[in-house]
Amino acid sequence: MTYWGLNAFFLAAAVLLAVVARIVRRRPRILPLVVTAIILLVITAVFDNVMISIGLVGYNRALISGVFIGVAPLEDFAYALGAVLLLPALWALLPARDGSRRERK
Image 1 (cartoon, rainbow, N blue to C red):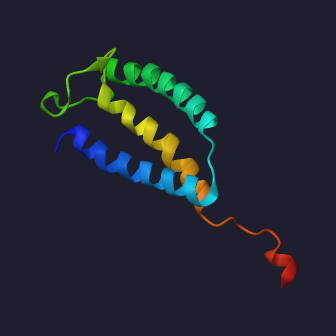
Image 2 (cartoon, rainbow, N blue to C red):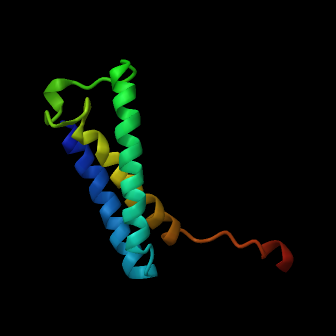
């Protein structure tokens, strides 16, 4: 399986949960997600290039697309986008912890 194939499963789940959170809870809002995505992609570009350049991480050339940002394969950025979609969606969909439960007992 290629990295894009693996990313497809991860991103599909993230997009699905983001859409459900948007429909069910009317959250998260789009602008904060876009700003977060831009910041996270820039940080990912910097740190992934450093990690790959020093040999901390490597990729099988047969399994990547061959498109790079610096020395980081484009596939590497899918996880940042997935996190931007998935984490706020889970936050919106999972039940909140009720701090007042102790007071009811």
